[in-house]
Image (cartoon, rainbow, N blue to C red; front, side, top):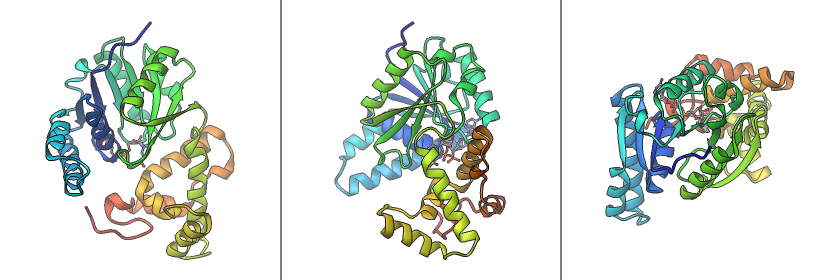
Length: 288
Ligand SMILES: NC(=O)c1ccc[n+]([C@@H]2O[C@H](COP(=O)([O-])OP(=O)(O)OC[C@H]3O[C@@H](n4cnc5c(N)ncnc54)[C@H](O)[C@@H]3O)[C@@H](O)[C@H]2O)c1
């Protein structure tokens, strides 16, 4: 069965990823419903987009008129109150399997049966999330990279039951967002995090074992392997809670001890040192 023409995208989670996805969706001329647990959080997500667009206007990359048009397409909403209006859903809540399954059960109840339900999960198997719905053929992974407005890639993950029509609709949406896609099989960490997260975890072990300071590890990897950011700086940027959750999924899903999260990563998360978003991770940041 085909999927409908997409005009309205509902985005669940107005955090760093959901906000970025809302930004590029509105820039791609979609009507956007940006949802979070409370209306205040959803409004904060829209406000952050307004600030980013303001900077783009200051730099001459956007006109004030374009900024107003993009913002005008984004409506903050509380919870799932308006999900029945959506032609396409993108879930970007926290990386927690029980939470995502509960959300997909609710989407399945509230959303039209013909629409695609996408998740921005970094690592949880799509097949497992899809299985809690009555439409597993319409569930797909749409893994945006951070920061969404800057990063060109979206990794598409097909669950075991994902249909060709769902894949095709998702590719069309990504093309309208001006993104390049790669398609991955639904196996632990997909392509990008399967390779990236063990490297970040190993950098945390290097710090834990006192091999070098955080700055030396980052500078070594940046200048020694030509990466734009060092692995610890990148972990802070992604969020240490998200990094820990991904390592736990790799360890549980692939069953190999080489994926065990570094104890120092776990301790930082327990301390609430989650990286940039809390002002402290492996490096210290001014709070935004
Ligand atoms: N941070 C990254 O670099 C990155 C990259 C790619 C994918 N992801 C994935 O994107 C997802 C979101 O990550 P993030 O970094 O934006 O996290 P975040 O903590 O910045 O945002 C998550 C948001 O979801 C909201 N939320 C939680 N439960 C909700 C519910 N029941 N209803 C409505 N809103 C709810 C929270 O209030 C919060 O605003 C995760 O699955 C993560 O793995 C993250």
